[in-house]
Image 1 (cartoon, rainbow, N blue to C red):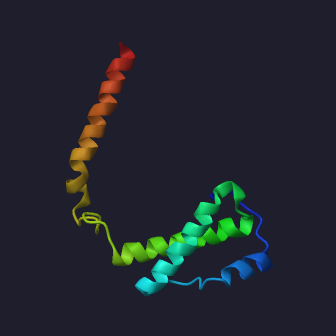
Image 2 (image 1 turned 90 degrees about the vertical axis):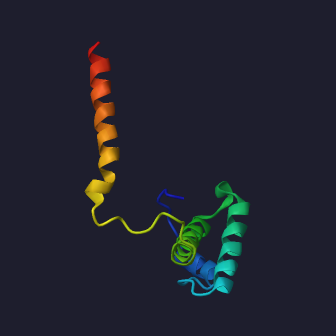
Image 3 (image 1 turned 135 degrees about the vertical axis):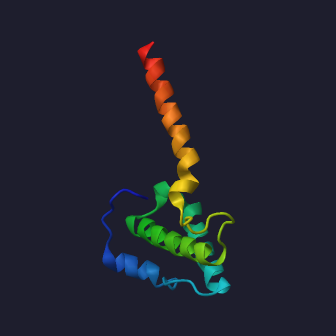
Length: 107
């Protein structure tokens, strides 16, 4: 779906008119959108028109936005204010790996 496609605006509009393509506010809208996404996915990526691919990508973004707002994954919130202190152990490990690779390549 990431390839650039030539989309016919009239065909896309006809497809998009079958479902309300907008930010999702209710669980009912979410369920309806997920069903539409699944229907296109079931068709198979190789069998989608450029317009269907574009619509699928748009709907997937809307579903993801709803999920992020209403069903956030635990532990994936804000970045800590003191990010450098929080991330330092990860940075240190990367530096150790880099140094190890340097030593290995010099042997």
